[in-house]
Image (cartoon, rainbow, N blue to C red; front, side, top):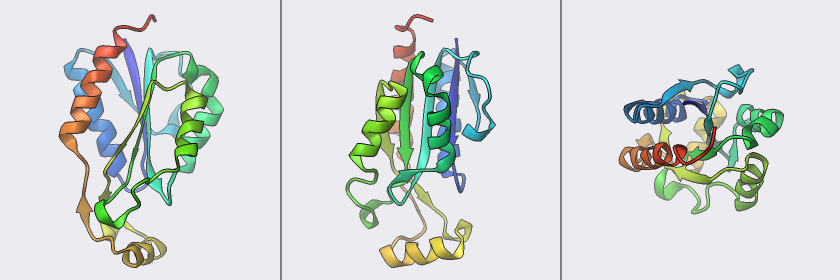
Length: 166
């Protein structure tokens, strides 16, 4: 069994989540490829997908949404899980992604589940506009990624993968 983990990441924090997920899957005996969505051209190798994106202004990154739009028919044929990362604690809204957007992503992909994980902010990685927005909402350098929760969720995915027919 081979699984694709594809985290769209603007500043590397979501990519780190994807690599941690891949490590957990490998510990469960699953072959994993970790690839950015814009670099994927063939889904036929995979038995399942974990697709994610950093959240910016309540939305997935364009590369992630484009990938889902372009490959939705292939994605829907295999078990799929979605994740978003980005909430930075008290400085972010309680609903960091619009529920209608989540519903749309789940509908397009046939996803088993969608999870939201906290994000990471390193202001020196931001461009001028992003730094302005971070200051405006009161966000400071921080890391809110719940590594134990990410590992537990990924372990549960590994267990569920065995219940799907290839």
